[in-house]
Image 1 (tube, rainbow, N blue to C red):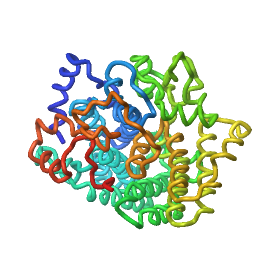
Image 2: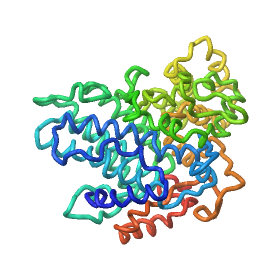
Image 3: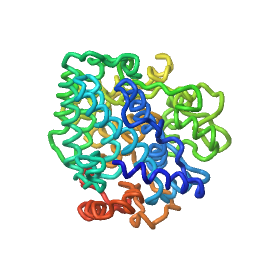
Length: 468
């Protein structure tokens, strides 16, 4: 998608004169067009991890009430002032000309050079970032997105076909990673697993389970498919999850920490999350935040207790805790309450261990919330699982918390009374975000076709995966 490089210079100028958020989306926009595989892979992994934590996550985090904006642009997000410009740089330099373009290069060059493990990792990262894109916008370009000069106006794939492409990419990744590595296997250049094919395969199966569960409203077999993938070998511990460690320097640091450092006082912990943490005497409270006056802060310089706000925070593409929450929900949907209860207990415990909380400090919490005791209806049990997952996803899986809300209705979020109606006439918790302005300017016909196919692009319009 070379058109994005053309637009990038305009965006840099635009952001300079309008103070829009731009600086944490693309790790290295000046890479040469042809480089070795071991030069492409580290940046692709870094950009993928950055996409988990940067603007897309901040805006989503405010909407799903992990965060609350109290000043400047984030205060606008709290009031649903989220227009076509808000996520434009995230679409361009974070996703399409960033991690997805690099993933495509890994796949293509790895195939040409007969390096199947690079191909496999590239397909996992492509699926991961494509999952982010479709979770935010629904129909998105994919099948025509990387044809370069032969097609500068890519058609939008339907969301249903995007999810099929994600599953196919992950299947193909498993096949590629099951082959001999080739003459030059990923090693130190693989910043996540140092070239371990078996751990990447477990990650692929875990991501397959995640994306099957995205479709619980569309596919009655979604939960059974998710359980089948995990039974074949998903992530089995906190120590085997796909962790990426950010740099302790400003260049390449965790975007949440950099945002807090550069724009302190703009976001705090969201009221829904605070209510759950404080109301349940949750031992994770002190790992997420500290109360300062009336607010619970997200970032504080030199406060090493705040796990997700360190420059060098270690963030997984998918956590072991999330995998166990997926199991808990999937078992519940398959009428195996005993297994659901066991998985819920293990999910909460995994998150506590991931945060470095001593078992003595969370034993009573597990006794109260690590079970389904006393809950009689399916909805009560589902709410217990998703509420606990929502707490655990703070700082590492914010986009997934929004997916869960849209497909289950949990946790029970209330829109702010000051919410703006311009892009959200029904004043609901947003169901989607508007397509970026760059697509309207450069790919209008395909954009309009996608909007019409989905019934509009205002934030109260559900797309295919989450329609009732």
